[in-house]
Image 1 (tube, rainbow, N blue to C red):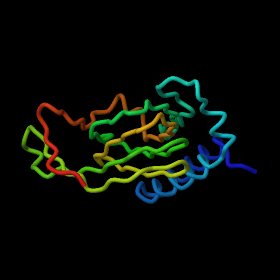
Image 2 (image 1 turned 30 degrees about the vertical axis):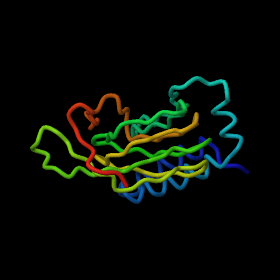
Image 3 (image 1 turned 90 degrees about the horizontal axis):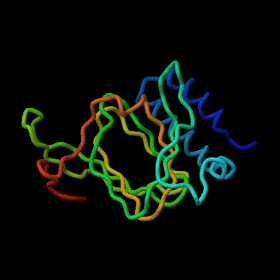
Image 4 (image 1 turned 45 degrees about the vertical axis):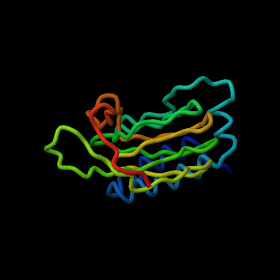
Length: 174
């Protein structure tokens, strides 16, 4: 029997209650990969006609985590950002999500940010990666992509880091 969204949400709830965050993110990312390899889940969640945007697939009211389905436009590159005090797990259902991890190299007391890319890789269908609180990363989608993202809360209500092109600086790329 194929792994379902309900099983994933139940397992994620149990893992978050039982584990410290770092190992929990790894375990949930593994489970998300299993879910994304279920062709029935992918077909039920996405179709070729869906416009870019996000939909909530699940919200856990007790632990406040969200499971979101994103349709990403092709030829789009995001700027470096973090999820503040929260976390996120990204998983690709279709096409590739190019990920870059960044590190701030200047003191936080300075009002501008200097970033260096520390890692760059692609998440292909069925592949996932977790990002802990404060971890700066960026996404790029060379083609239209279907992505599932699990977040520790509603990220729109948290202060988060966002790269400001006019003021911040990327020192080098990997």
